[in-house]
Image 1 (cartoon, rainbow, N blue to C red):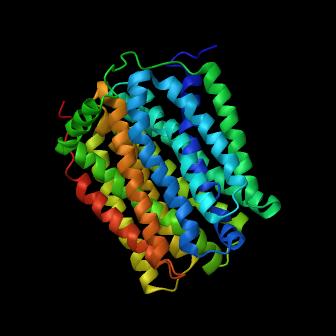
Image 2: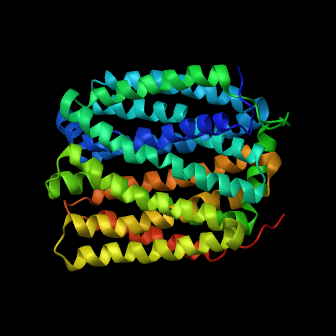
Length: 395
């Protein structure tokens, strides 16, 4: 039986589909040091499994967004979950780190459907301000994934080894595939017959990129997310190896940080009607710069401790919760007939830039928090620079 588009059950299903992406990133963070030992490789090689995952997300969004504009949201979401489940099993049987990198790349291509198409579904159902409010509330609910995922991943790593994490991902993929196939409604009421035409493809992206306001929202979100991913890429090595935290305890530190994201998302959801999308993006940009620079300063002055790592990151996650949902809504809302393409382009730039930030942290990693916080501070400052350029809806 198909759910009604505006029903609570449809919203819950979209949350589950979108949350699978961050879950697939965060669940295996506590296992990164063990994976490095299992394949006898350096830190940069292991972190490439994260960066290539994001690169897969980036590339897939350019394809899946227009596909959902042409053929509908439902078939793209269902097919994506099938790809995700199969690739998760391939990760389990990876004989080399290169195999694991490739399997993670394909896994990302599948799970990407949940994020890019899920955001387009929200835009299909709700208007500009309402979609910003819904994205903030959905983001708060999705924050449960980063809260729970490292805890589950740490427990699985300690008790069953790192491959058990990918068995869990495969089970999630199979469940969501079946649930979406049975219950997901189609929300794309006006499919674009020429959405896959290369000329139309380029025209859509050119139209979006020619808008100064779209670019401001786009890069504010991308640099903010890149700063966050710099931390995600290096946190397990700093907290587990440098500061001696146990893999299953790492989850509690990570969960404390994610509470900041939930606070930011809740503030954004409650204040968006009063302050508007642009003012919340600007507020998030200012906080991203301030907290990023604070994190770098604290760890430059020393001594390095769990407190100097966790405390400033909690404030940075408040900025992410404020900025990202509203930047997404502000970028997509003026383009109802290109919601899939706009969502895809925004996701592509975010993921590609974050993949670069993660790879950069891996190559300059020196056992201290300074490389990841240096990249974080740069990302937060550039997020502020672009956030201050956003303006009210042009359309």
